Length: 371
Ligand SMILES: [Zn+2]
Image (cartoon, rainbow, N blue to C red):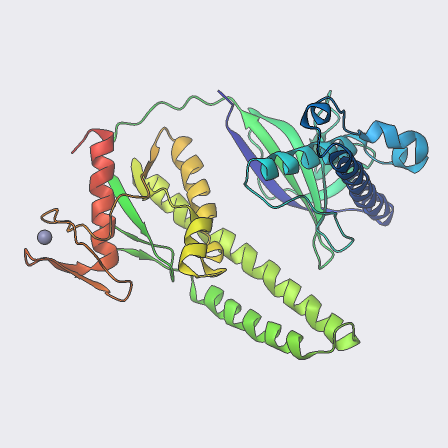
């Protein structure tokens, strides 16, 4: 079994020289990625009618380019090796039908690279982190990484607004004592807010977050009216990027808090195993489902529960949580999205989401063998 892992993200404050080396590294990673992609495309093209011969082909590695492009040696070689792994993963994802065909990385793409811990090359001390080639970089460590966590890799990112961040991925040995399950709650995913629980409580984003979303929408409308490439357009684009960043942070804070409260309060949390991507496509909700943060929320919830020996129970997404009466168990043939109240022949009337959350809770108890 894989060891559990956890990432810690911090703001990074490189010096001018370190900024230059970072820019160079982002560039080299992009260059190597695109080179390898180009060669792969040529190989696929050459052997497209000969699958057997294609299987015996070897794909390029960064080492190959270092002879031709000596400046690649100036940057962290692990970053280049990871570019190769990323490309490989991109092709695997494509061949397994998860993503589109890998694309070339443009200058405008996200600026980031990943390096690995090898023989203690990454160290932390007194507000500084030591990274390959960069040496000691100042960073704001607002929380401790527990001593039993082992650093595996670091991903350095530069945002569109020019800020630097480092995400430190750690692994840890962890055998929490399984907690006896007493308090269980069911959550029904809610489009506008986040969830409704089986006790009738609704989680909702704070007001300042919803206001920031409105502000972003306004800023985006202004941007669309500006002439592309003009000074005013660039200014507005930066404003939009800043708002995006702020909103992403606010959302993450809220999701951390909401999941922390649940994980501390309950021994098991039951949710439906939703396929968000499929759902948003099927229902034409567009971006709002992704932006709702459900995926991120369930990830946080899972590790926060597991580190305390508690459980996240996922029930089958085909379970008719909305159509079933939580009192008598009758299943309705249909229930339109506009019906906000659930009414059953047995006389039971409840808010549709609460009814669903109660069903999810019950189904979870069944799976836990408690019902
Ligand atoms: Zn009923």
